[in-house]
Image (cartoon, protein in one colour):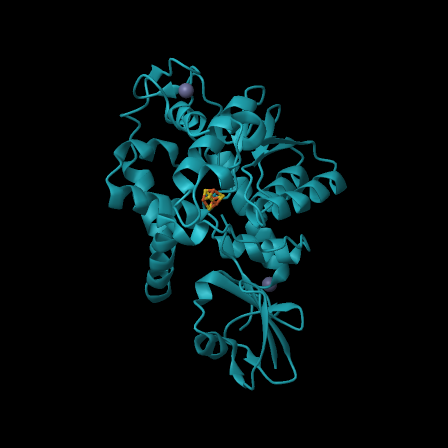
Length: 64
Length: 287
Ligand code: SF4
Ligand SMILES: [Zn+2]
Ligand SMILES: [Zn+2]
């Protein structure tokens, strides 16, 4: 799946299926600091994500 | 995960709500802070200290939505690759939403941008913040209050930073509303009880599309270390940030205020000259 990480501006291609929470853990991102969208809709951490999804990890921290 | 109020899917886990119920929750929480702490009276003229980041843009959006008389002031510190971008977005947002925006720059006001004042790789936030507060105060005189986008995360970090640095007098700058002091425009924080995550979710729902941008100096700041630590704690002990604020509000006292006036600019301060004037002298002597 394509995972866009807003904070670094990079798009990663990862093969993953599981919960959004597990995805964040594998990316070493603290869930306090982001929201996740699946196909441009916000999802909660318990939701399943799969390879055909387009995922964005949006940063919630203020930048300055 | 379902919304705790209806069968729709939740979009956030804490509070566990769907899009419609979250929107109601968010807006009523802002309203409640405004009413409970007497942040804004209906006839008052408010200026939002706007950076072009998601907090201040969302604040402009919601205050305007609530029908308040609101304008924006932005400070251009001169941080290449960061502030130029956030201000570009802010200008567009304000013109689309018919909000009057005024921008004041370090370059014009102090003769030098922040980039030229601070050496690369050195911490800048102290200088930056002092000068920004000085300009904001100077240019907000004609408003009843200055509203800032500070949220529960910012404010719990600030309480902790003051404790760690044992700076008691800074405590007076915190809280949802600062006290009325001659020479200072009163500051209010309508997002005081909302987490930055909640603000982000609301901004997303409303399609505000605020681009993420990080100040190149931010990583070096003391605050960023405190923020990371606090977020780790929050993950293990949910509610930590809110507890810090509630505890702070219950013990807050307003003594130790700045009671003198700066001999240079007249701003309230604790010594003869305020910190902003001392920094300006240093900048001038370096040219
Ligand atoms: S992070 Fe520091 S240097 Fe950057 S805008 Fe904020 S206060 Fe200024
Ligand atoms: Zn609902
Ligand atoms: Zn002064």
